[in-house]
Length: 312
Image (tube, rainbow, N blue to C red):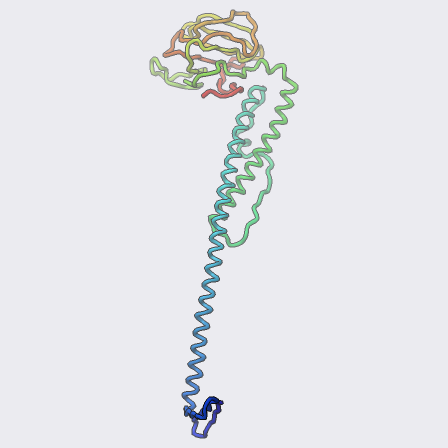
């Protein structure tokens, strides 16, 4: 049993009576001591609550940070994977563009302007939905991916438009296309000196090289790249043994440094017919085929007419 008495001289008496025995305990405290004890208790409890709240807040904050870090890493990996896929698609679009250029040459159509091909046409207003307050590097990656997707979209639309025009031309002029050089004259070999200016291997002077050299062993089969008529089949000075084909549509092809000629002037040939064997005749530094393509007298880069594939 607990009793409290307050006397007039600002002291408190506390009497505690035990229920187990008849003992009585009397405690005498001043008012200041009681107030101090109460204040100290309140301060202690407040301090404990404050540090407990801080500890809980820290745990919650750390948990949120761990979750954000995990989400950031996952988002970063996803963006890297997405960018890699876009790079692969971009490479495929680049291959399609090269084929488009080759077919346009084959069909006698003008090439698409480089700036137009780079920018494309149309496109889509592609936008990735994002949350606010994301890290700057993630935001920059997202912006870059959006730009890449929009650029690819425009390029794909341009290629689709080009394909439609090419399809119409090929469908309406299929008979004329058999006279356009379009296959490799040899099925094997490595590219040597190309079309354009080069250093002459004999005197070191710079001069224009009008064809494409293809390094092959002597005796390699040489095929007609398109239908036509043999215009020339004989020796021609530094070119050695030479075959020239007139394709009746402004195109003429020349094959030089041959070891054997299998056709005669005036003979009609079709694309893929055997016309000669490669060699080392004339002015050369080793066995190879020298191949030229001319269109209405103007020399062309033969690589633009290898439509059936590419040399190693």
